[in-house]
Image (tube, rainbow, N blue to C red; front, side, top):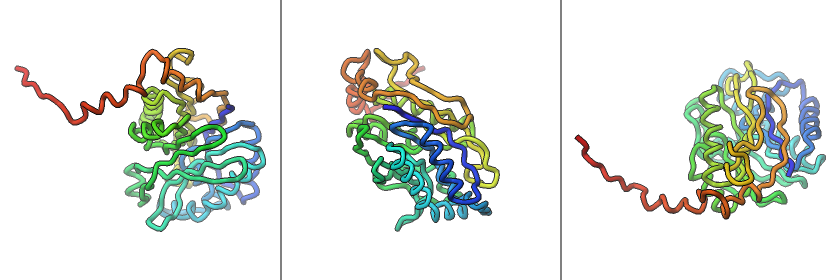
Length: 289
């Protein structure tokens, strides 16, 4: 499978036609089976036409208002180039509040979504968003795909649930504004690959967008991670881009081969996971003087 991960920089555009040119060019040049965009890439929709907002809430609402146009461009690209696309994520209005939603699009134009489940403090306070209500697994022609949006991937039980349900790969669209945040996301990805003995792929937002407070600065690095085991890289890194350099990392991956250590690896993290559950909540405290 040819996988393309975009280190994506949001830009202002005079109109939607100019934006479509960027989308069409990116997907066409990637020539991949699956293209992955980052968290909050959809805020680019709010920049079309030179819009200006004064608060994170105003930017949130404008991006949500234009979410349909954003998804439609990537849906058109998926159909035009015959590929699957994770169209990043962005704000979407629901009956109960505004969520951070990622869209997975098939080559025939079908659209499914995953909402972020665990929100960061910034999303809770400044953006007044609400968490999603379901963890989904998408059964596609490329295999079963799970999506954990940025902070969600720092929580191992979410990834474990997807892996246990049969996920062949977990995609992590991310948006972090400081090196510490990028480190947490990146190291969590590598841990999830070890625990689940599966493919984990990260696509980050990068670059400065001074006019939009939510994404005024973003740092990140594309990466494709696997369990370090027989037949796989000993450092668990299949491919990676350069930090804070916008562009598309394209690599060939075989999710089945990456998951093979589940049955024949040096260790059995996936199979042995239940063994730790018997120790949950059980700690013996010894006085030592």
